[in-house]
Length: 282
Image 1 (spheres, one colour):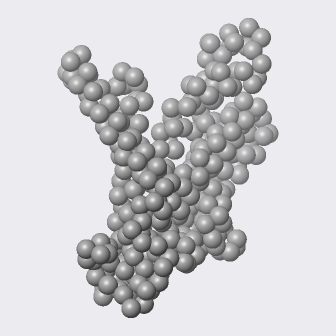
Image 2 (image 1 turned 90 degrees about the vertical axis):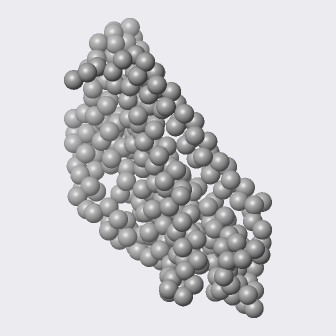
Image 3 (image 1 turned 120 degrees about the vertical axis):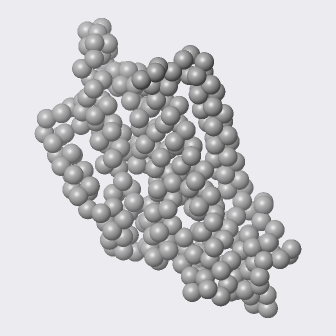
């Protein structure tokens, strides 16, 4: 098989860099825009006007109105804050928690490693979303409980990744040299272990954002997430699903918002994975 030339590698690196900047900027705009979503709303997203209920898309209401006459564009924009920040909070928590568990298991080993890994096996043995539905139902629904339910079932993958990476780094020559030099456990972990296992964990987290966003929306769609009248994409689709055949814009608007957001984060995750791949010369 022909080896890639230096020029080909440079072209591919420049292509990756362009993709990383493009999708990174789109994701950043999405996050910042959702933070200040109220400023971009043309109408009050919670203001009801029954005389203008189920209005078709027009110049006055670009995405139409729902059954209560609320402007759909304003509700979709406002719902981005709940949907996106709930997802980022969830992914951030399970990344940190799972990484800590994985490092502790790999570093200490013995009975603690066995105990925590068997617990993670127990969570991985159940279908993820079904288990999350059960946990969310027990907790009683709501955005916070939906986040907790998904966190309960999602941390093991990060623990597994962190554990395997830490075990690989633990036996390297430079770690042994650092131990002989008198480095403390904390210094070994934060200065030597974490920087070297950060890449795989970051890629896992980036690729998980889209999945977690869809699962949060799924819980809300099934009535176990955000509750009306809170503007949240999954809840908005659930509340208007019976209008899909007669007034499709009401249901499709938040669905398209989910589709676009998930696509942006997935493309960013794929690009970060390729960028950090050592075979690409990084």
